[in-house]
Image (tube, rainbow, N blue to C red; front, side):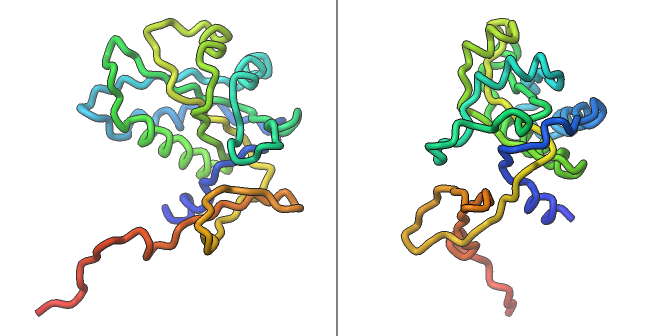
Length: 196
């Protein structure tokens, strides 16, 4: 069910690096992104797929990993992603990609979860470094990078604490905790189920 896929679709930052994502699965991720809605149907998003050690090593140093985990520099060797998708916007097609990147990345990550993998959206990217490392032409704006692999960590959803702190954190067992607001705190008005 979709609800279960969404529950499993957490931001994973530690992976079994040796667990390869098949090329067919990476292509299915992009296929599902391709089939997703696009503002004005412009379809200006483009992708660079990386699943080799050599290319992954070029991408990794260009990323910042977890803003709230100040003492954690990112995954150590053997816990790094086994694949990346670099999401770009082709400015020759449009300079405004609206909400397309959010829709596309959700399709990509739900596909990953469906196949037993997981990922993390990384918008904190040293864009000029990655442009140079991957020789990305100037016509493509770098939007974000999706880190992918077989998750090596447990991520749990917690209720928001009374003080309203939304920062994710890790406990002594390296379980990653993500506070979420209650459903009733999100809905400002609801339709009545009663009829006259």
